[in-house]
Image (tube, rainbow, N blue to C red; front, side, top):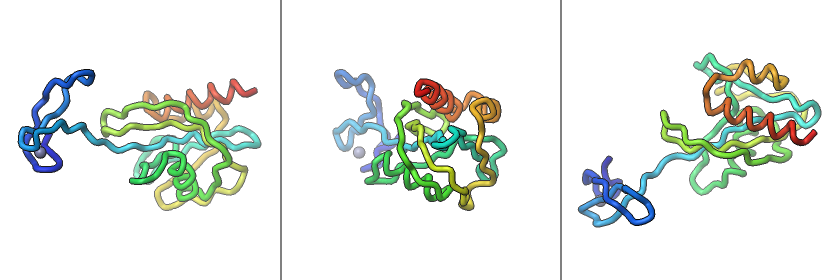
Length: 163
Ligand SMILES: [Zn+2]
């Protein structure tokens, strides 16, 4: 780990109430790590509560739609923007499901249940396939032991509570 300001190799130093935090001797400051934040969206249709799974180009597994939060953007704004960009669908409402840290890619993922209308999908070039699934189909098709699966299960639990 190197200092993002001066390039000096960072060491770990104890900081009260925080534990071990990267420290730059050159700057004389603690340097908390930066990492990207992304949203993961379990998109459900308002009319029949089917859930949208998608395969991205070059990926053989079904996942939920997801996208990075842009600098200066709120996660709520990211949801509406990403859903529109990737599928052309509108965001009617959303509910926060929780978050998970995705270790392999060092990303904080925020999970949302997003409600949309029953309209034709206009997939963008990132999507190879989209599919509206019943809860059972979605559970069967989603990539196992993935962050997407955890958010899918949370979304289905949330939808179950509403009935
Ligand atoms: Zn530095």
